[in-house]
Length: 420
Ligand SMILES: C[S@@+](CC[C@H](N)C(=O)[O-])C[C@H]1O[C@@H](n2cnc3c(N)ncnc32)[C@H](O)[C@@H]1O
Image 1 (cartoon, helix red, strand yellow):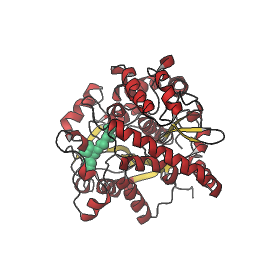
Image 2: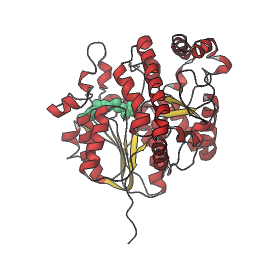
Image 3: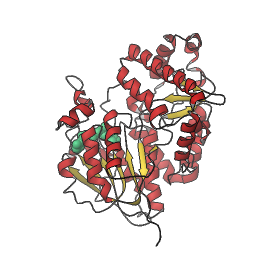
Image 4: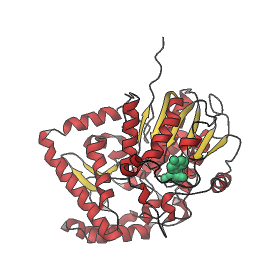
């Protein structure tokens, strides 16, 4: 099983979800409703300030409490028990990444800092503007009072934590320099899945289905390293249209999600088109374009059935639309080895969720669907200032569950074959 960012097992993630759902019994419903209202109000604020859509707010807010069932219990997890971002980034960086894994860990840590653009500029000003506006406009007086103190004690500068993503600074805009649009938590989770299949000799290659500029795939290649890992080399496959997310080709695709409306004049980057040459250039910059990287160009429904894929150990699907995710699942899941990981990004998107559910139901997949650890709820704090105002979303007796609604991923691990 994948250990979480603090090296503890998350084998209990499903149990946590179940426990949380059990908690959401009649007497807790009121608290959940309050949290839901609070989440919605946060997004209402954001919509006014930054132009985020309420529809996405509802989806984002909804996933945590009602969809994957994460909640208060996840605050018992070491990754989320840190009281502040600073503590969290310290434990994430020192304990999990650097201390436990030495130079290799440092290398991967630096790769992720580069991929997410973290190292290139000081984000403090962005934070200050973003959070001040959010707090000043909040109807809760406490939030307004906090607005001047939001960057005290270096809080804004110290933001290298599991929720970091370059894109989060720019609203819906994808900066021209971003090599990945994934959050650090998603990247780290992919890394952990790869480390797990290597350690457990799960057979097969790795694939990024939906690569954009190639950042996630670069991390896959970097995680294998430059010395042959236990079990031998694997190919990192990069599958993409290299033309962006296609428009729906069926009536069902049209009604099941709204990705068809993404993009448009001045917002072309929202369809995530990036050429194969561009992706290769990204690999080259990291010194990682070699014979262990393979490309599968074309739309998944056409390219994957005839791709030279034998078996897969980790499949990461990041394709956003209902049809694309369904096509990718159909093309890849049958090749996933027992013990392998199927990870789907952007589970907050309605079409993605539907595709996953339909595929799992149609193929009787009973392995528990789990949330990418530390993805939806990225820190727990009893201090609203430390949690930057927009984070204090759910309070129960022990915890404040914070920052609900970050981009979410879901995954499951294919059952290992039991020994005969
Ligand atoms: C959100 S981006 C992927 C982000 C990427 N994983 C990263 O690290 O930043 C979605 C990608 O999926 C690709 N895509 C979506 N639907 C596809 C399909 N049906 N066939 C091939 N590629 C597709 C798009 O071209 C785009 O590159």
